[in-house]
Image: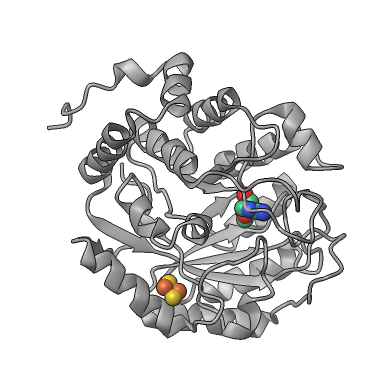
Length: 337
Ligand code: 5AD
Ligand code: FES
């Protein structure tokens, strides 16, 4: 029985804008998103083991602490054999997906990454890549090596804001990447930042409509958090509740997709991931690398879990998930059909 929820009333952009613009219907919105989540993807939460394997990046995104112009950061690159070690350890700990994430580090080109993916695929895990913009051929090489999914947030669908935030990058190329990933048969993840300076509610509504338009399999949404070593250091942080609303609407409209309770949400609210899991999210991505790297992967300040080790994070998040009556998924967590 699917027809529990009358959704037609919030399909238009105007109505999305209205919901995002005022807070009187927040309780209704979050509980509706929670119902849709339960109905379409169930109570099991998928844990993805995250390996942030290099903080070296050639880009200069204005909001991101990893931008190459930031000299106040200790750069690192985990060696291939250690990446494989962490991935296999994650599999032994029970993770069914490993996410390999990095800055746009040219050392780790598609060829090198393909070797790593092939090795990791010998363990019984799905592999998600999140390493930025590449050519069709590179994405193909990685798919052929066994990669299952790819995360590439559009960040914002406002073309002008995109341009301001991403010097020397091309909005159309980012869209091309998402299209190529789809063509190649990846599960495609995208998402946006909420609270960028100059971002309007209308453009957030467009972001949600974009997720629908490309039929995203996964959508990650997080509030912007000002990093002191970036040009946006004095900009106000994004709002936790607005990010939560964008996420809840995304759940209501895209229904059966995977939505993470993002680390950025917990950075702004000590219970942020649990609140997100009760407002539409069904995925958490605990870090599975050693403590030494965590501090250095400072996309934004006050990131959570930087002093914990993989075992502590696994235990911590499992307990939190169980405390709200949810379970830990045992399957790889592809998009439910
Ligand atoms: N605040 C919040 N999220 C950020 N990201 C990058 N910088 C920040 C920041 N200052 C997000 C981007 C990117 C993801 C890996 O981290 O959306 O896609
Ligand atoms: Fe890392 Fe809670 S998930 S300490």
